[in-house]
Length: 249
Ligand SMILES: CC(C)(COP(=O)(O)OP(=O)(O)OC[C@H]1O[C@@H](n2cnc3c(N)ncnc32)[C@H](O)[C@@H]1OP(=O)(O)O)[C@@H](O)C(=O)NCCC(=O)NCCS
Image (cartoon, rainbow, N blue to C red; front, side):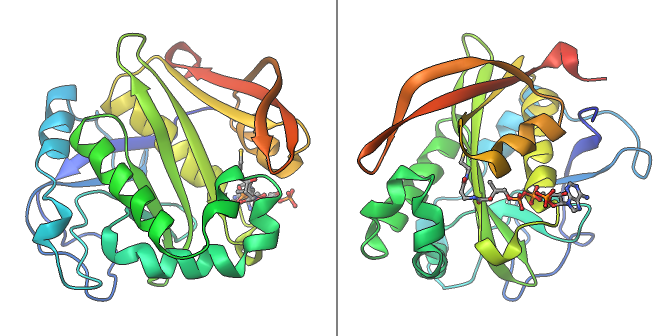
């Protein structure tokens, strides 16, 4: 599958974006992605992207629950959308992790450390800091105003213009191509908005469903890092997949 199939652009209002209950305050730029051909045109400049990232207000400016800043919105073709995670999402995200604990623990080492919502809140705060530091971001995957998973950039290596993506989805939301779309969207963002050269995904060798995502999107398998990740008491080998800017059409 060729990548990216999205056009990336910054908008200055939210009028054309999908509605979410209690969403948005209308300030600042909104990032929208639409299927190429429907919207056409080139993406924004890196400077515009950085200005937009820098304009995201601090979480403390949004104390009311469910009052999302929505500075970043990315409509996925299948009907879900991505938006930045906010501190007010911590309880909902924790409840989702908790109800999917056994399934998520199989491949995500951090799950065992989520005894309550506090570690999730810390994760969200780190994601907001990432955004402020121009070091990537963490996004909720939302369907019908409900968070069904998460996806984000591990960090950005600006010197080498490279980044990595991590993701998870609620067990009962698998099998519809949502995560494939979300990964495609973030890869397009990395190449078209940030003008990065490389996007990497590392997956445990035995995690077939996760490996299928980069494979479906045309990432190249580069090799195996032996026992690179500790999940619970076991060390897992990791497969490294990459997509380069020159791989994109
Ligand atoms: C990894 C994970 C996100 C994969 O979920 P997924 O549902 O398989 O991925 P997608 O949402 O992209 O859906 C792909 C499935 O939908 C199907 N599908 C339906 N419509 C589709 C479309 N338009 N495009 C792509 N796939 C589509 C695919 O055939 C595939 O189903 P299959 O595996 O039965 O063939 C999920 O299993 C998960 O969160 N696991 C636990 C955490 C984890 O492992 N995270 C990754 C760590 S590296």
